Image (cartoon, rainbow, N blue to C red):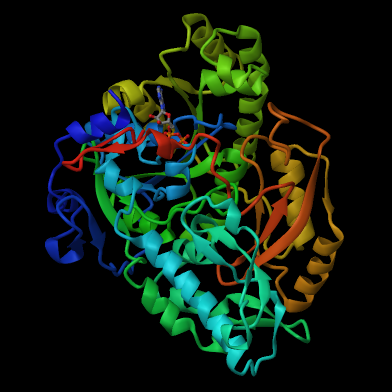
Length: 553
Ligand code: ADP
């Protein structure tokens, strides 16, 4: 059965029943149909109880199909529920880009899925649309301001606020707006980004409440004036209008897994071109209501987990008690040199070569001094010899590794991992941050590249060097750095697999996201508006006259 067929066959509980499992009454939620709801703002005065555990699921460098991080996350949530632990899963909302393009959905797979998966993967509760509309409203207001009086003397060539769309559309990467004559606007070159990479998405995910949302929106730097000084949304007085457009989107969304574990899906920044974590509000809500909160950070631990620990954690105010690193035989072979189209074939040599990738991710997590467990996500194509080799490697290295069958058997296939995770969360956690906020942006960047990626140095383009000097003048040195980089490699070259060393990370440009509270560093050729592949997933999708969808995944 396909993921979609399994999801369509599922018997769901009414959302009010799922809410009641975590102590939420009908007044605490706003149902969106029968199986989805928004959670109204909850006043959490008290600190998160120390006994409430946070588990972060991340992975090794993936293959283009993904390594089953969400699948294991959902399986783990259901396994903890089966073991009678009060558990909430907190994860990101899928984007239409990967759904229609290449990677697929983001609601897990097989018997470890969040439902209703069709809704969640398509329009869900409309948060993506609200973000897109709010972003483009701000763009329209800026262009209108330029045309009418431009009292702040904004330089049309120095506006950095772009329009966004929740789909991969390479034709819109570079555009010219305002053409057609004087009354059509001020002609300028700009472009589109995918909504998942937008600053508003990051702001939604990092805001702690409605006032903080407005404060952050007000702090957004939309560009520079003719004296090259930053201009903010607050100076333009647009912050209230944009906040109003996002007031419903700020409320976390409640759904359920196939095993009826309450799941909060909220916010969906990609981990390669954005900070890769679901919202602080969602995770905080889960941490307050459940004994175990299991959450994910996108792509490999070099991207998602680093950003979780260095960008989201300080705002969340809670460090993960355990990190689960998902590895697959397939991705290890891929990292060890096995071509993508041959990943189903046994190859012990490639597998062994790929261990270096897992090892570096584990070393990185150990560097933060958080207890780590490895989940080997079992595929039917894995051979016994391959699994034995992987298990013996982990044993030799003293790594706690558990083979999980979340995809084939849901929570029941993830019980051993759940036991291991519960034990790991009891271990002492001596979390050590990677850098201090007072360090310069260059130092932070260098630390991530040398200590996490394993590279030797960072080089900056002339433009990036100039920007860093300006940013120091503007007082932005204290912000964290969010590196936008390929997910396939520790380096900025997607073909450099495994655990490369002696490489240089090339930063071509910085994008200040002052409202979100970080500086994005664009590494290598990474683009903030992806393209669709030659044969997009959209081609496989069908709908019949009764509205039944097939071929979604
Ligand atoms: P990630 O979160 O790492 O991107 P997902 O959990 O979204 O990965 O899984 C990607 C795809 O792989 C999904 O279609 C899922 O059904 C499939 N998948 C995951 N684990 C397995 C497995 N063990 N066997 C077969 N397919 C799997």
